[in-house]
Length: 101
Image: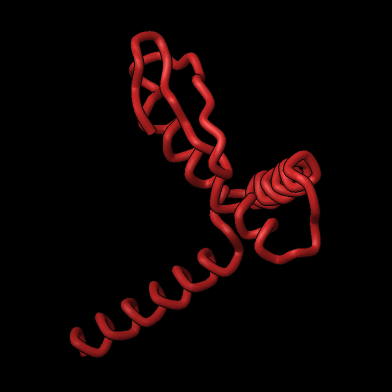
């Protein structure tokens, strides 16, 4: 992905696109483009979806679902991560209690 004055060149499924982007957002845009490319390649490689347009729609639906799942979490942290953090916090508290006694 190359940068150009006033925009950035990204590649999605081997197709190059020039996208206007402020300098402050270029890194985030490049990361988003890589993520989208990975998602679309995964869908394409599954062999279940034929055509770039359908692949893009499926990727968009999957990404929208991921976003909505994250928004449903009260903290924005996926439930399994939140439960793991609570478990680890409990273990740390227990270990500290053992040291105090």
